[in-house]
Length: 461
Image (cartoon, rainbow, N blue to C red; front, side):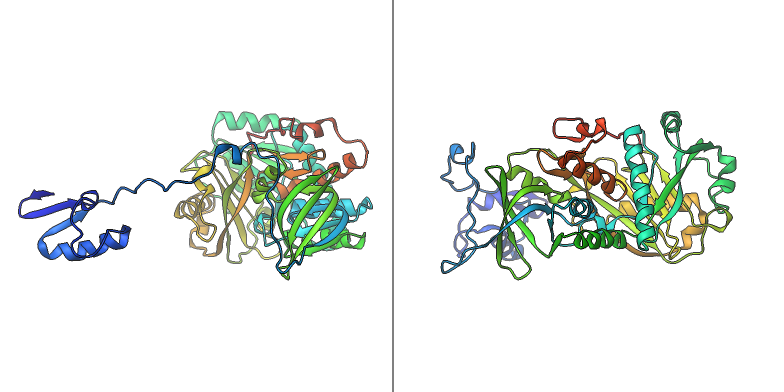
């Protein structure tokens, strides 16, 4: 105990060596709180926290956990009731844009896939845009393929498709050179700051000095995510596929040349699917199940936040909606701030990518960070000062997956799409099914496998 002036201080650690004070043995925070109440009238103040005691002995040896030769056993019923067994050709886990795209093309190929969906994943939270501006020509080619598929889908049924321009702002010479290089395989052109109001929006800030140039890429698009996913599912069902909604994958393991998946369905009963093929398209939760199959991809979820404003008049050139604007500075903890105006409602929808992935990876999805709201407000108001008086209608968060894509028919992987699932999934799914059914695919497709490099897009994340 220390005495400073006329006050006495005792640390929480010292309490462990004092008498019981008539209250029995000290037991954690509740005891500390009681001690504070008891000692305060005596002029003694408790400071700090108690050092936790060492953990109790856990009689488990390392050899029992690794190497592990058999999967965990799940008890799924009582009174001898066992899980129902169903034999199917293909099981797809994950009903977002990736899984729904696979579902459509597998059904087209006559594979009669079963799709498991549980909850509302990242695909339902994205900002509805697609682009062809990438630093890698291979990914730009996949994006072009997807653009054509979006056009075909809209011709079949309305998904609110609309062609737009993407505007990439260059804040330094390195970014400018990367943008200029991408013009070799993109329909794009560069403009100077003096032309921002003419080519981007008449409302652009004429005093904006943040950028040295901007690249405008044509042939990009927007569409409503929910309508797109629903249409893909309807097309798959029409060709013999089956959707299992509100069904959670519990475990997956190999059984000879096939797979056994334990699933808890909407009625909380268990089904054991015996499938010839299994595809993991679960996105942020996918790594858990790859590990059950002995595959270690190293993917991890990153929290991604977004906003949508109230309705606005169209703010682009010639009275059109504002295109997708992108600021790629590494600034205040973010590496990209971007957004577009939805033609259907006039609302501006946008988001920001965290500069250090783990910075937001463990944050609760129920909460949005003040950092995100501040950076979105600063950048968008910097572009168009009138937006400073426009209210947010909603702010939300989801997860996307880093650090690379895994599109692999041998290992049943369709994950790691890095927040680009809406714009790339359909073309990738078509190639996946083509390879699965023995049709030719581009040479670069093998780079997306577990053994490849994943076509790393670094400049235009």
